[in-house]
Amino acid sequence: MKKIRNFCIIAHIDHGKSTLADRLLEMTQTVSAKDLQAQVLDDMDLERERGITIKSHAIQMNYKQGDQEYTLNLIDTPGHVDFSYEVSRSIAACEGALLIVDSTQGIQAQTISNLYLAIENDLEIIPVLNKIDLDNAMPEEVSDQIVDLLGCDYEEIIHASGKTGQGVDEILQAIVERIPAPEGDPEAPLQCMVFDSVFNPFRGIIAYVKVVNGTLKKGEHVRFLNTAKDYFADEIGTLRLVMEPQKELKAGDVGYVISGIKTSAEVKVGDTLTHHKAPCEKAVSGFEEVKPMVFAGVYPIDTEDYEDLRASIEKLQLNDASLTFVPESSAALGFGFRCGFLGLLHMEIIQERLDREFNQNVITTVPNVEYMVYTKQGEVLEVYTPSELPDQMMIDHIEEPFIRATIITQSGYFGQCMTLCLGKRAELIKQEFLTGDRVEIVFDMPLGEIVFDFYDKLKSVSKGYASFDYYHLDFRPAKLVKLDILLNGEAVDALSTLLHVDNSVAMGRRMCAKLKELIPRQQFDIAIQGAIGAKIISRETVKAVRKDVTAKCYGGDITRKRKLLEKQKKGKKRMKQIGSVEVPQKAFLAVLKLD
Image 1 (cartoon, one colour):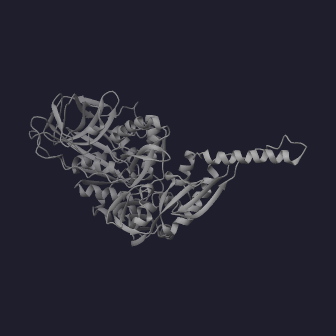
Image 2 (tube, one colour):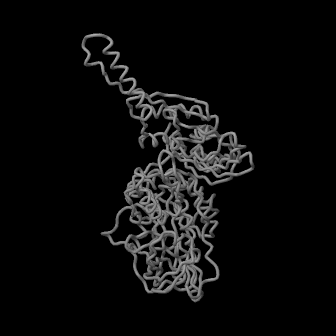
Image 3 (cartoon, one colour):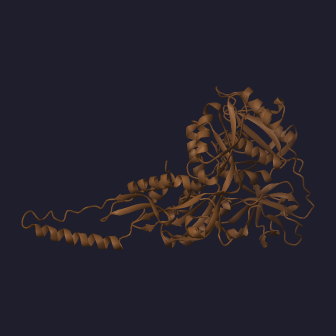
């Protein structure tokens, strides 16, 4: 155990974590020259296309220092705020962390957020100043920021470049010298923490574990404590670039266990794996349950695909433990699921993965957050969708979730960021200049205001410089109303939204105008109305496609024309009564992106 080091890489998005991980793998000769490529650990097409890490990736490296050989277990983590749950799980399996800061951009919001996660778990922090080879690097300025944040010495900061490989030797030495070896007793009862899992269609569920105490041998009878299910460890091993089977895993090791589990409910990330005959007394104190921030309905386009969609979401949940889902039904869309996501990017990625990995075409409804509705009878209801809202006469008051948001930006964009946040009903808590040119603004604001397009707008007003991070605070009373969209007098529940009373009229008008552009014309007029309760606040009309039935009358009496027009009028009236209006998928998506 003295020769094992478990560490993760944490940083803000796009600060060069995956590139630096590539250099570490290259330097320790874990990856052969022919297998080496950019973002070698990011094995998902989506990760490569977008240049972001979505999943944490674990890999084992061997490093020789002097005549001693060390085993280094590296976990590369995502940097985007929407995948912070991946980071928290990785941190729970490590004793140390490389904190990477881009020398051209300095410390950003997610850097601070991930750092606090690591400090809470008592990890040894090694600060690394990355991209030092670039012409616009600011090593002295960014080093000052790191020293202010960590309280470390300037000598402890390693200057490195993931592109050229500069400083990678120093990082490997620092990992061995500064990060403590894992603590544990190989002779104690077996105690393994499950920190991740993936679904393999041939082998079943593969659980990634960190052995805290005891020794796990191949073929042993094991038990998952939380689910109380027993299995045989058919194959165990370490996580190299490919999985390498081993005879045993000892305390301090990070590896995988395959036991032929087919049902996703039987493996919980954060569970404890132990021996069947001599179980450990208590579970490993892992990490808390995930708290979804954004809720949206996910429905199959064809109702017959409902069971396939359920199986796909269950398999995806194994790979992404921050996804939550419960069944729900909608009058307009049939049976589907209400899914909980950590943010809008997370929602977009899940939708994309369902399409690519499971061939599931889905409709996603307008994202919502969770509201607490207090009725006049004294009941408290948790409401996720506007259709669940009781009658307006029954409601005493509604409470909505608030978040504490931290924005770090250049002082030149301070005014624009303030204007944007105050327009979203934010309350300023504090503002602080970190350096002469960088300012930190802390707000309390409603979560419902940021689920649409807040992040995109923040990036555009700050020309991409502002970084944003948030955590959940509490529920606070708010004046909210339900905005319904009616098509020919019938409400489309998938387009209903809960809004603050001040924004409702403007939003209703914009939604009606947008839908008018996107709903195809029919043989009859379609009235699109925005309504709050019984009050209509906006209206647009999609005009009918007119067929010229009188074209064949090129002469003769006017009564011939009138007779044809009356007949057409009756047909249109009947069509309006029985005709249904199809809302295309792009109309649902366009409403999300209303500017």
